[in-house]
Amino acid sequence: MENQTTVNEFILLGLSTDPLLQTLMFMVFLVIYLITLVGNLVIMWVIKADPKLHTPMYFFLFHLSFVDICYSSTVVPKVLVNFSVATKTISVNVCITQMFFILLAGCSEVFILSAMAYDRYTAICDPLHYIETMSKQVCSQLVGGAWTVGCLYSLLNTLSVLNLHFCGPNEINHFSCEIPPLLVLSCSETFFNQVVLLTSTMILGSNSFLFILVSYIYIISTILRMHSKEGRRKAFSTCSSHLIVIGLYYLAAFCHYAKPISSTSLLGLDKLVSIQYSILTPMLNPIIYTLKNKEVKTALGKMLREIIFFSRG
Image 1: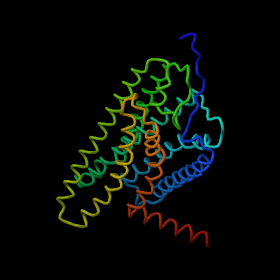
Image 2 (image 1 turned 90 degrees about the vertical axis):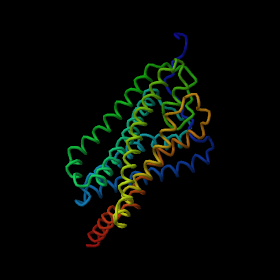
Image 3 (image 1 turned 45 degrees about the vertical axis):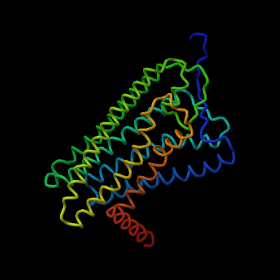
Image 4 (image 1 turned 60 degrees about the horizontal axis):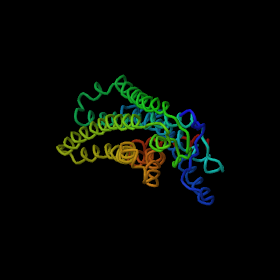
């Protein structure tokens, strides 16, 4: 091992080497990033400013938007830089740091979505105790727990990567520093890392998904027993946005991280899946919640009218 050269930087091969295609993708990803920032900041601003939205459901939506901003900002700026430069290098330390924050934001989002499922379960299945169950303290603990679990998950996998030795090649066939393509480049034995990644992903991801699944089995059965058509419509409306977001995120992220590292032959598909959960989903979340949520649309419309009124005055 002593005679092997230690790699100090990686080359992110990205999505394309065609200059014209890179220019086009730079514009597309820039627009996506701006929509992500503006959309999520608007959601946070509306929830913070409107007292009617100071409820547990919107408290979690506020933090989901914050996580989406963090997630997107961890990945997209580096992608944009690499579209505009000839040498797409990233130092090993910066690469591992990016990997840590990708894992942190991704895992935290999973458990915030779980907290949102618990909130919907309590609101629909146990409405008489909703205010008591979903107190401000409980909501804060759930969000704090999501970030804590995310931090432990990212630390566990990042520390295991720090023990690896990289001696070449140094080309990562991806647009960001995620664990699967990084482990392929290691000159050290990566079996332990694969076990840690697969085990932690399966335990945390499966438990979170099963919790959401069981919650929604109870929620749907309760909704179907409602006598009021308006009550059923409203209940389904408040849950549909959450279910769409879960479907978009879980399917892509879980499949990418739960599969064996040796199956990274479908690199083009891996990149598309990564784009889905790390770039497109943070952009789509505020759009989905805005279009599907009457209260958010009403609050947003009211604030826009006030801004227009004051600007004219």
